[in-house]
Image (cartoon, rainbow, N blue to C red; front, side, top):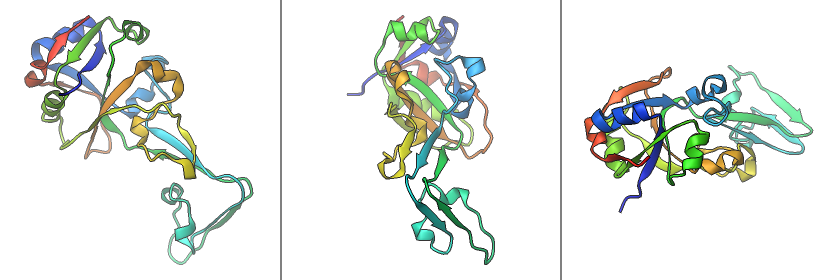
Length: 211
């Protein structure tokens, strides 16, 4: 049996979802806008993680198999050129998840967390599979979704040998742990995307308001 998902919203938007299936789907990188969203909803490092080595590190494009995997996308050498770097105290680089459509909910209703996020209503999604398939059919240039997946609150910085291998889209720092967040991500064929409002009437059929 499916476990329900809870979506915190403003009441006026919750009513639109319940009546017609209208819902705004945000973007992963859009949640970086802390000035607009505030520090509880926004996160300037959304979709990023940072990997590093410690100690003496040598990078040589003549030996590509020895280059740490997280650095390879950042190294570009043309033709017969060769790049050599020696770092006495290690190197670091960011790993970025491409911008995607994202749904953020919670797997456990908490009225305190709801108010901290600035919302005054909660919609219970009784059948997440039916809900997200209905939403997917309404999103342009999207053919599948990832999740629902619980967010891991492990932080975003890892020594590369301890990288948990989790997509940055499902990572947050421990101070957000009280949100008990669960996400669905829709990779898009477009490289530039914006939040979109969709109407999926079949999604409304598996929702009910609990707050």
